[in-house]
Structure formats: C-alpha cells, structure tokens
Amino acid sequence: MSNESPREDINVRSDAYFIARTCGTCGCCGVSTLLVAVALPPEHETLAFDAEAESEASAQDTWEHAACNAFLFYIDYLPPPVRRRLQEISPNFRFAHSGRTQGSHWANHCERCGSLLDDHDLFCEPEGAFLPTDPAAAGTVLLSLIREPIEAATAGYTCDPEFFAAMSAT
Image (cartoon, rainbow, N blue to C red; front, side, top):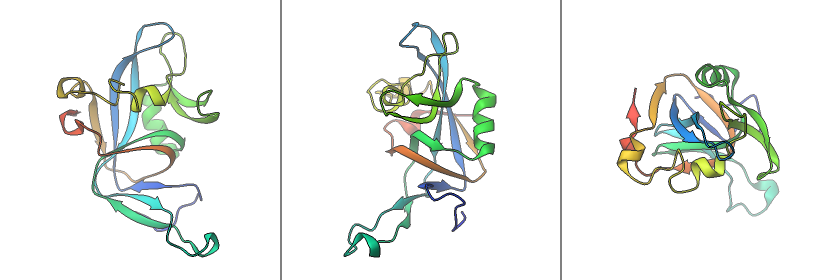
C-alpha cells in the first residue's frame, strides 16, 4: 500500500479487495435486480483522526490496520480501474445523487426501472442485500477477490460483517 494518496479524501486502502454480487428487490418496481458492492479483506487500512491531540491544529491522521473484513458504502471515490471492473459486472452501478444523504456517491440502480437502491437499505437494514441475517442468506452473496490495490473515499464502513464467512467465494 502506498504511503501517499493522490487525493486528500482517501480514508481506506488495501492491497486487495472483494467484489460482492447478489440480487435484491427494487423498492420502486418490485423486480429482482443485480447488486454489487466493494468489500475489503483483513489487513486493509483505515484513516483514523488523532482524537487525543491537544488541538485540531496539532492532530494528525494516521493509518491503522484493520484485522477484519469490511463492506464499503456511500462511496464518494473509487479509482478508475475499480469503477471499470464494477461497471463491467453491473452497468447499473454508477455515480448518483441520493436524497437520503443529500450527497452523491457510487450506487446500485435497478436494471428495469433505473431507480437508485439506497445504500442504507442494502448495508444497514437487517435482511438488506449485504446485511444477511443468517448463513443461508449470506450464501447468496458471491465474493470475488481482486488482487489489486484500492484506495477509496467512503462515508460508510461495516467492520466485520456478520456471516461474511458464509458468503460464497468465486
């Protein structure tokens, strides 16, 4: 992993990443649609703010190793090679404005009606596509390990997702 990032908003990085694939139901039209996500393996790094600094001016961000898997969501920035891989799998994964977050990020869209599928519903709600509540549901998520570096700017990060080990490696 590089010690320097070309962008100042990068807050996660890793020597490898997973592309997760599953299907979910569109809340707008009710049709099943392909969904993709980015996950990181153990030993990825997260940027941590020094909360113990005496002042904000003296605080320095530091990179910390994470010993767990993690899903990324509300992703503001992905490097072009990662975006291309994701869009080859699902052209409906694209940069969009979300009413819930009042911001723009990379998000899944319905294959049929084009509606944005909210990351909160996919990653934060029990039984969401990437938050299964049992091993059988987790088994419907396919994980492909990509042995290439990634740096991302993300507002959502799920550390050590339950049932990650039950997801299917391809």
